[in-house]
Image (cartoon, rainbow over all chains, first blue to last red; front, side):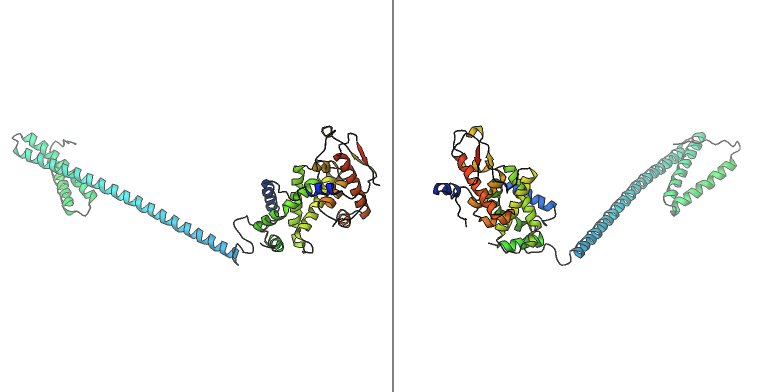
Length: 190
Length: 182
């Protein structure tokens, strides 16, 4: 309500004043600037979109819930870590066992080939007419057989066949050494 | 529509951003032109003052008792913020001294009729404020005197000087006008 005074506005002047805008919205940036400033000063709480008027964002025990969630997360991480570690170790052991098995199979194959070679050499020596050649063949076959038996005993210490072969060869070697008058021994290595 | 009082309570109690934005969009359109006219039409200054007014309002919302409407309460805060702004800039003179109000007429206005908004922005801060509050916002001299902390007679004198200076400017006078309260 206006007071009346001596410099009353004319009708035209009053019309001009009334034509002036009473409401003007500033730029949208100002709203965002003010909201941001209010957050920085701690005068506004949770950001828009996370909470509505009158509805609490947390339950009655926010700290307890946060602590329980943290413990559950830690325990889950620990369990997953242990499982992954155990899985990795088992895979490594399995790979090593596979590698050992492959090596053993290759060794057995080599030993078998040596047995066959020794047997072949003995068969040839038995048909030869040259005594010296028969003696060299026999010595070479015995050496191969000795090494093959050694390898078999190393791979399978409880294998009775390999053990007996090794014992027989050792005994024969001692006898041959004792019987040799010149003490010379010829060795053929493969 | 949620009442202002509920929104004010949500902001004061929970710092509710949604409630604040609703209040802001309801009441800033009235606050902004008031502040803009008080600071002489400088938009950047007006935005700074509006921001300061909302900072003060939110900080003091717990003290809002609802004796007046929220809009009136906010505009009072905006008025004080604008006055503080003008004081810091040295543009808020002695509002009691209205014996002589000098209105410089810019060269571009010589011989031309000026827009009323432009004329208002050219008035000295004290009498401009009284003119805006009285002739545009509809405040009484008692309300203006209480709000600005001046005597009722001073408010009337300021209004007289402001109207006379405005008439001079609107009439397209070339020389510097000297408005004296009669």
